[in-house]
Amino acid sequence: MSDAATTVAELRELIRNFVVERDWRQFHAPKNLAMSLAIEAAELMEHFQWISTEKSREIAAEPGELAEVSDELPMSYAML
Image (cartoon, rainbow, N blue to C red; front, top):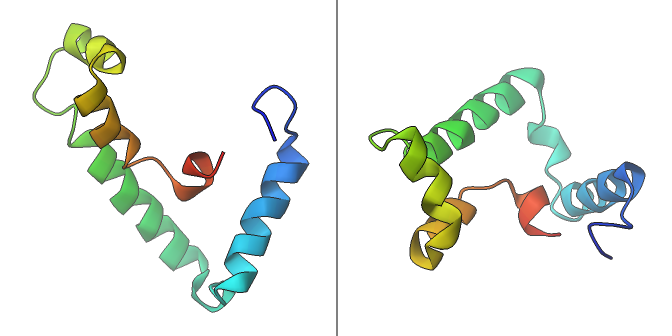
């Protein structure tokens, strides 16, 4: 599977299977999903909170910092 050839439908199926295998559907109420999304977004934003816009654009060129930021990306993105 490559970024250039993967469809949204294929990604949705991968995520659906991931959820089913772990019996997570029981936790996927709108309240829980909204809270989890906000928490994950906050963890990602922490890496940018006290740096300039220019510095934020340079993170991709710094392997150590890029790895830390990448760790905060959603599981669905990390699976690709």
